Length: 278
Image (cartoon, rainbow, N blue to C red; front, side, top):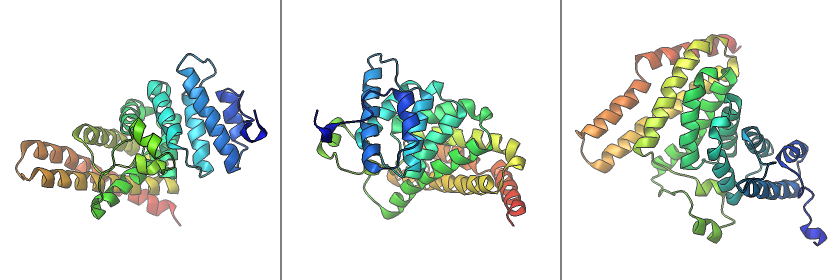
C-alpha cells in the first residue's frame, strides 16, 4: 500500500476509533476515520464483533458535528442503516445527542431513521432529562424549519437517495440528498405524537430548566407547530377540498398540539425564561 493510501485507523475497532476521534481536528484525518467507520459498519453487518453499538453511533456523529464536519452521503447511509437496526439500544442521551448532531450539521436524517427515532423517543420520553428534552425539540425544529423555508420558497421536493443517485452524485452535499419539504400522513402523525408526549414531560420538569434549555424549548416548540400548520395547509391545497374528512381529522390532531394545554406550557416556558434571563 502506498503512503498516500495509508489509513492510520485501518485496524481500529469502533471503541478505539471513537476515542481517537475525540482528538482529531484535521479534515483529512476525519475523512480517513470516516472511511474506517464505514468499513466497520459494513463488517458488523457480517458479524464483526468490534462494531458500533448505540453509544458508538451517537458518539461518532456527535464528534463530527462538534468538528463541523459533514460526513459523506455514503457514510450517512451506512450510519442510518446501522442505527435503525439497533435503535432500541439507544438510551435517552444517545437519542438526544444523535438528533442534535444532525440539527447542528443541518443534515435531515433519512425518513426511516427519523420515524424509528421518534417512535423510540416517544417510548423513552419519561426518562429524558432537561437537556435531552431541550436538545431534541431544538434539533427537530432546525431540521423541519429548513423544510418550512422550502415550502415558503416553493422549491421542488427532493426525495431520499437511491443507490444510483448516490453513485452519480458522490460529491453532492449530504443535506441535499436528505432534504424533504413535505410530511406524509404517517410522518405527520409521529411528529404530533412526539410533540404531545414531549409537552407532558417538559411540563413536569420545566421548573428545573435553565435559561438556555427554556429558550431552546420554547423556540423549538413554536417552530415545529408552525411547520405542522403550514404542512397541513399545503396538504389541503393539494387536495383542493376544504371539507375533506381526512384533512379535518389531521387538522384536529395538529390543533391539539397547540390547544389550551399547549398555551399553558408555552406560557410557563416563557415565564421561566424571563425569570432566569438577566
